[in-house]
Amino acid sequence: MSSTLNLDAVVATLCQQSGFEFRGLLGQGAFKRVYLAVHQGTPFALKIAAVVGGADRFIREVVALKDCSHPSIAKLYQSFGYDHGGHQFWIVYEEHLAGGTLEAGLKQWQITPASVRHVGLGLADALAHLHDKRLVHRDIKPANIMFRGGQDTRPVLTDFGIVRMLDQPTLTHAFMQMGPGTPAYAAPEQLNNDKTLIDWRTDQFGLSVVLAECLLGHHPWLVAGKSIHDAIVAVASRQEMPEVNAQRLHQAGFSSLTYALRPWPIARYRRPSDFIDALQRN
Image (cartoon, rainbow, N blue to C red; front, side, top):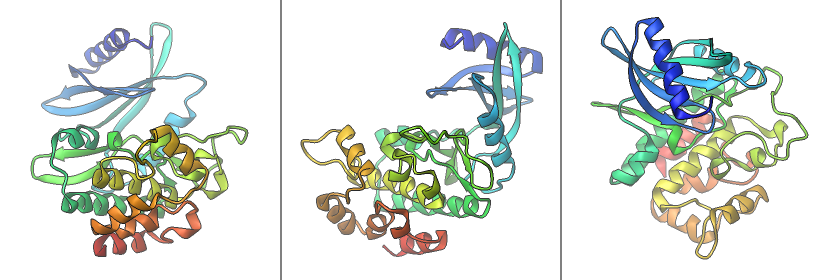
């Protein structure tokens, strides 16, 4: 049931049963697909994922998002399990973010230091909100940063599928070599599955990789003659950012990112307010 055709059919049937108008595919990731559905003139993002081995992570995502209320965090409206053709799926209705992803925008827009700072400050404020809720997103990347479009230019953080709830037992096995996340945007503690080191500073690192990538045009550990795999290995082994990239960030007025991208969490900004203040200044 992993093919686009089959999932199209599942979602079309669900929409018909629920009185929604099915408008087609919006995007897809490794484990879920997102469709546009309209109800009484209001568009929604309908997310569907096959349930394999239990729904614990899906339930955790829902609980986390229901506890959040921030303009730079996607709004969740409804979620539930859905059986179709002998298979179980998890369905989520979220707000439809018509402005698209930062991933797409990096290919289409002129990215300026001012726009990078705007995105950074909006999302750093969202991280402060998550910190208050004892939540760690763990998958901040351009594909998970979206925009509502129109006059609302605030960035919106989406996809809490691997959110870590610091007050709940971890769902990641200790024997795993690498924790969940997207390797190119993961902090060293994620890449090494150092679960005791995971906190809001892990998201600080991920967001800072995104911002540095916007400014440099590539991963902050990537240098001439090396691959993105080499960059990830360097991060995992806790090497400092290459000096050539650190200097470019200084020259662009973003010295704050070199601090936020230090290999060990204890060396990064201690509090979200410290990170926000630094982003505003340099």
